[in-house]
Length: 502
Image (cartoon, rainbow, N blue to C red; front, top):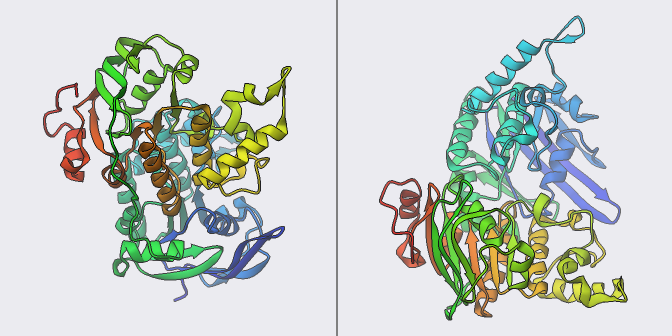
C-alpha cells in the first residue's frame, strides 16, 4: 500500500534564496509525523507547497499513490488536505460558525442553510471539547486561545484525509492542548494522516509516530520518534551538538528595582506582591487565565490598577502612564509581538529606535542614516539575522523579531524588563539565543521578570520563580527549590498557595 503522502525532491527558490533544496517527506495512512526544524529551515514553505499556496520549482507529490499537484488551497482542500496555520487566518468580522464553514457552507437553492451551518460548527467544536465557544460570536472578539481552537475546528470540519497542524498549541492552555492531543490520537485511529509542526520537542514526542527534520531547506534526518532522544533531534536541527540548552552564569543580585505591594486590577490580578532585584531573573508561572499577563500589563500601566502600589527604585509610580514608566526605566515585551510588540511593516531601524527618535533628529527631522548606524550596532550586539536595518521586521523569523522587540527596550535604556512569553513560537536554536541574551542582561545588572508557560525554561533560566493561581501571586522561591511537578501543583491549587509577599 502506498503512503498517504509522498513528497520527493521538492525544491523552491525565491530569487537568490533557496527555500527548499530537495526535500523528501512520507506520511503513512493513520500516521503522525512531526516535522521539525529551526525557523527558516523550510517547514512553512514545504507546507505551502503541499497545500497549494505556492507551486514548487521541481519535485513530485503523490496522495494515496496518485499524482498530486494542487493549484490552489481550495483545490488541496477538495483533495482532502487541510492545514491549521501558526498565524491565525480567521475573518474577525464573521461569526465563529461562518469562519468554521467558510467556503463550504451548506446550501439549498443557492441560499446558506444557517441552522445547518451552526450545527456543523458546533459538531467541529465538540470534537475539540470547546463546547463553551459560542458559534454566533464574532471570531475577532474571542481570546487568542479560543481563536486558535476555532482555526483547528475549521480544519476538522473539512473531514480531511491529511491534516497539517502548524504550531497548534502555541496559544493554548494546558487543558486545551491535552484535548487536542486526544483529538490527534482519535483522528490517527480513524486513518487520518497528520503532519505535526512544533518547536516543543516534548510535545512532538507525545503525539508523533515518526519525525522528519529539515535544515537549510534540506531533509537531514527521519526515523521513529521513540528511538530519538532530544539531544539527537536538536543536533539534527542545528547541525551541531547542543550540550547546554540553557546557558547561564551566576548572577549577583543587587538592590530592589521594582516592588509590587498587593497590586490588583479591574479583574486580574487579585493580589500581587513581589520585589525584583538588580541582576535577577524572576520567573512567573501560572495557567492561562491565572492573571500573569494582566499583572505585567498593570505593572507597565497599560491596564488600570484598582488597589495596591507599584514602585520603581523606591519611587511610587502606581498611577503613572506607560510613557512615564518607560522614562523610569521599565519596558514591556508583549506575548503578542505580531499585534502589540512590533510594527511589522516598518523597518528594523524604525522598530529599534521608535521610542527614542529624538536623539536622531535635528530641527524636528529624523536622520535615517543615523538611525541605521545605531540599528546596525544593536543588530550586531543581538545577532539579528537580516539583510540590513532597512528590512521590514515582518520579513524576519520569529526569533529575530523577538530580538528586535527586546532590543528596542535596551536602546531606550530600560533597567527593568517585563518579558511575557519571550520564546513563544520560536525554534530551539533561537530560544537558546534569547536565553543567552537574558543571562547576559542579568549579568550586566538588568532586572527581569519572565512570564512563561514552558516549565523547562523557567527552571533553566530563572534565579527565582513565583506561581500565580486564580489571580494571586505566591511567594517567590529560588528556582532550585522547584520542580515541574511542584510548579504545576501550585498553579492548579493542588497545594496551598504561599503568602502573597516575598
